[in-house]
Length: 60
Ligand SMILES: [Zn+2]
Ligand SMILES: [Zn+2]
Image 1 (spheres, protein in one colour):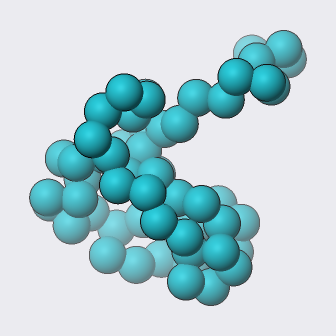
Image 2 (cartoon, helix red, strand yellow; image 1 turned 90 degrees about the vertical axis):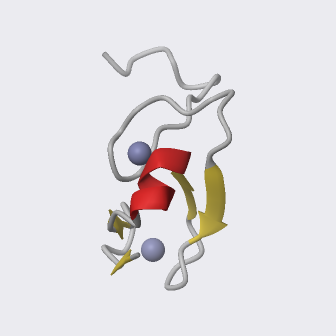
């Protein structure tokens, strides 16, 4: 499923996993390792927890 979609990466919400390209999603760096994290406006509003895919840091 992830064989040849390498070059046009789609951004997905870190919390709910929806495709957020073209939406007003928040974008920020992981405070631990600096990995770029995307979160949709809905999850941001609900203050859903996120988990960094790289270091496992969780935060609001
Ligand atoms: Zn979301
Ligand atoms: Zn991290």
